[in-house]
Amino acid sequence: MKVLVTGHRGYIGSVMVSVLSRAGHEVHGYDCELYHRCAYLPGGPIPNVPSVFKDVRDITQADLEGFDAVVHLAALSNDPLSNLNPDITYAINYHGSVRTAIAAKKAGVKRFLFASSCSNYGAAGEGLVNETAELKPVSAYGISKVLAEREISGLADAEFSPVYLRPATAYGLSPMLRFDIVLNNLTAWAVTEGLILLKSDGTPWRPIVHIEDISRAFLAALEAPTDVVHNQAFNVGQDAHNYQIKEIAEIVARTVPGCRLQYASDASPDARSYRVDFGKIARALPSFKPTWTAAAGAQQLYEAYTSAGLTLTEFEGPRYQRIGQIQKLIADGELDQDLRRPQISQSEPPRYASALSV
View 1 (cartoon, rainbow, N blue to C red):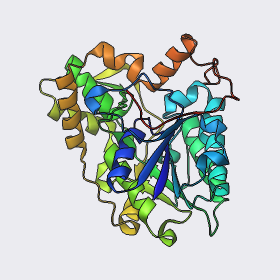
View 2: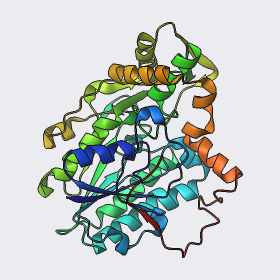
View 3: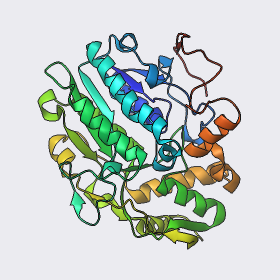
View 4: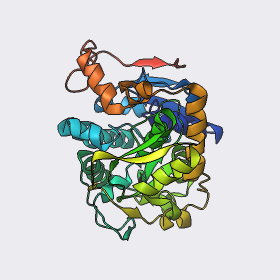
């Protein structure tokens, strides 16, 4: 199958491209390269695939001609970044996603896999929520994903099959590593400072899932019969991997020798708290076989961080924090307030490449 992955140079995309390619698919990439300076060499090489470098806000039917499927990952990636400018979040995550889906349908793409999020459940509380639960997003990021799902669903027909995958909070090693997600962040604190610093009170529930398992879920949805996945949502993760934040911290403490747990002085409850039921994906997509545990993920990160000599300055700096990197690019004049590159005319044709360099 010929597959286009938007956001292929991102934290998840740079892993997913390899998973799809190893499964025998012809993978191409589409990315605006917001994070071109953010490669993490201990995470391995960035996959080398034919690529177009362009913003999804400018995507056209011509960009999607000839593809059997689109895996749409491109988005502003988390709650703090999305809250930086909600209007831009909606322009990219909501309107950009719908634009991509419309262009894909017009181009004759049969399957459209949309990377949604368990953040859609937001303030769900203590009970387990499945795909039929009321969506209660509490951030611009979550709202943008809910709106995109709803509008894209209206495009579904016999020739165009959208699927909505809602991953739990991601973790794990990547060529485009992020330190601004919970397990990656807590392990980095433990390695560099001998300290696990919790910035909330540790009570909120959060399901987590390794990025390789996320990629396996997308692969399973890509290859499934249409009638199994057509216009449906699937939570991505495992029931046993619903944790309170303090439990994730305890896993890290058992992994990194000599570290201690501490709560930040301004620690407070997080409005986002949800426990997720992952039974549907297990039943409907039996080829999806997640292999990672939180303990194994913490060990993977611990070994990578220590072998690379990770420092506090490096992991708390802007290179691997998405909001910090965006703010730096704006301050340096590389991005304008709309998160576009001001020196590049919007009428200029996109750059293509058959190879990518780190």
